[in-house]
Amino acid sequence: MKTFASAACVVLLLGTGATAQTFDDLKKDGNGGSTDNILTYGMGYHQQRYSPLKQINKQTVKRLVPAWNLSLDNNWGEQAQPIVYNGVMYVTNAKATVAIDVATGRQIWKQTLDWPPETPRVVCCGVSNKGAAIYNGKVFRTTLDAHVLAYDAKDGKELWKSKAAEWKEGFSFTIAPLIANGVLVTGVSGAEFGIRGFIDGWDPETGKLLWRR
Amino acid sequence: MPVTYTHQGRQYVTVLSGIGGLYWNIARERLKDKVPQGGSVWTFALLPE
Image 1 (cartoon, rainbow over the protein chains, first blue to last red):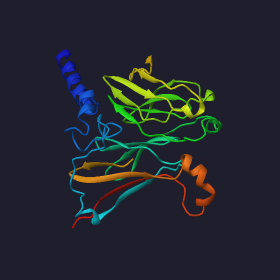
Image 2: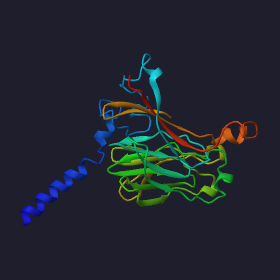
Image 3: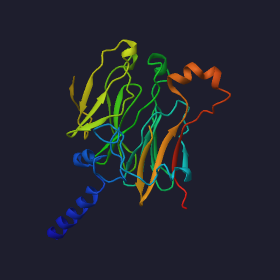
Image 4: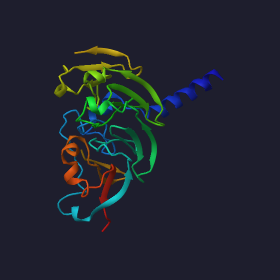
C-alpha cells in the first residue's frame, strides 16, 4: 500500500510538474521554447519581443481577422502585455487580473483589486499595469498602491500579498515583475513624484522580501 | 504590448485596447465623444483560405 501510495504521489507530482513553470522554461521563452507559451514580459529575457512564427506574414496578413474579443470592464486604460501558458492567457490592468482560455476567449477567472480611491490623486498619472509574471504555478503582479501579490494560476486564489511601500508617499507599482534565478523581482514607479527608486527581490512562495537595492 | 503565439498549430496575435493613463488625462475633453472607453482583449488569426 505504501508503495502504491508513493507511486501515486510520483504520478501526482509529474501531473503538477506539467503545469509548473521552471526557470529553465522561462529562459527558453522566445529562445527555442514552445511558441505556444509566452512566459516573460518582453517575450524572453533578451526583451526583444522576437517571435520565430511565420504563418502571419506580408502575404497572409490580408486574411487576419478577429478570432475573439473579451471585455475587461475597465476604464483606466490597457497597457499590459499578456502572458500565455498551456492554453491560458493572463492579462492585467490597474484594476484586475484575468485568466482567459486562448481557444475561445472565455474568462476562466478574474480577480479585482481594491486600492483606495484616492490613490490616483497621489500617484496621479500612471494608473496602469504592464503585465504579470508566471512561475511555478503562480501568477505574480504589482498594484498601484504599492503591493506585490501572487495568485494560483489555476483558479486565481490569492496566495499572498505583500506591501512593498507606502503609496501615500508617492510610491506606486505598475511594472511587470520578472523571475530571476528563482527570485521574484519588482521595480517601483513614482520618481516623477520625488521618490527614490529601488528594486526588490521576493520569495515567490511566501511573498517574503529577500532584498532591496 | 501585442504578443504572438500558437495554439494547436495556429498562429494568433493578441493586443489589448482601451484608452486611459496619462494620455487620457490630457486628451479627455478632445476625445471623449470620439473614442469609446472600456478595455478589451483582441485576438486575431488568419481566416482559412
